Amino acid sequence: MLFDKQDIPAVLLVGGLGTRLRSVVPNAPKPLATVGDKTFLEFLVRQLRSQGIHQLVMCTGYLAEQIESQFGDGGHWDVSIAYSRELQPLGTAGAVKLAEPYLKGAAEFVVMNGDSFMEVDLDLLLQFHRERKAIVSMASRRVENSGRYGTVRVEAGGRVAGFMEKTGSEAPGIVNAGVYIFEREVLQSIPQGPCSLEKDIFPRLLSRGVYALEQHGVFIDIGTPEDYTRAQEICHRLDQAASLKQ
Image 1 (cartoon, rainbow, N blue to C red):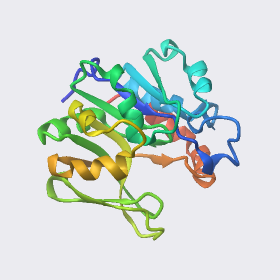
Image 2 (cartoon, rainbow, N blue to C red):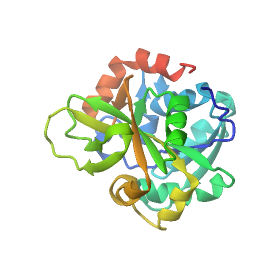
Image 3 (cartoon, rainbow, N blue to C red):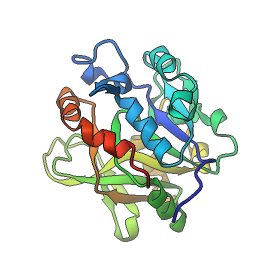
């Protein structure tokens, strides 16, 4: 089923400090790290546009002016971009809460981490979300080494039963891939100020229906120098996945 997503905005979390990547990307925010001949953030913008999302809100923070200068109003990518700039680090949930004024009238919206790429079919994720009447639906991915991500405990039907923090163990597991559909009411559960979606908000919402839909495409998080190097090696696959029309 194809959905008209013209009225569904996407919030991109691009304000992080990126300290672990500073040794290889010293003078730019992590989402502007170059992969091939493009910035990593451009892959995310193109992925959203190719799947029918044209209203973007970028939650900026660290070196915000670089992102705002490079992407402007989004016209070059056939999208409309607004900026919600945090003046102090607010964490993933705090950044979403700060962007609330830009989400007026949106019954549901996409949230996406700015330092990871998941090849996801947003139509399928949206259908899954609506069928289950979820408050949050997330894309998940099975990985061989789940230690640096933390894992998601998923029951039959995709309902999330809990989360396990990063353990450092190199065991396989299902991880949160950093792409979500939120109901508007999630905003009411986020306090003002710094807080984390993963640690503070999602665990509180489990009883209200958090679901995970497993994905099988290309997935990469560029948070470490090693994975940033791997992104260079698969940049052609990222480029193809970013342009894939569902």
